[in-house]
Length: 88
Image (cartoon, rainbow, N blue to C red; front, top):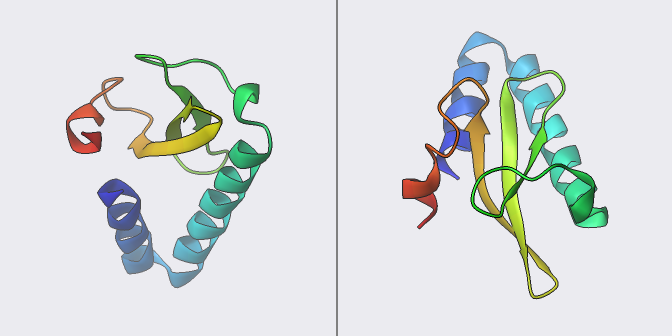
């Protein structure tokens, strides 16, 4: 998930605290999704999306055979599905 790393790097350049808070929220998102994967709304092409509360990113994932597959950490202001080329 290159975009997650790029976002972390950008926040770190602005403020180490912002980068830490971003990673904390991202980790909490992954944990919440794993605990209740069907809780968040459907998105594009059979995926679901969890929107971070304090940062303009969403975690895009899908369930496959009882497993959760994380596909992207995508910027919420960009065109929906732009991340698909990267997830293949």
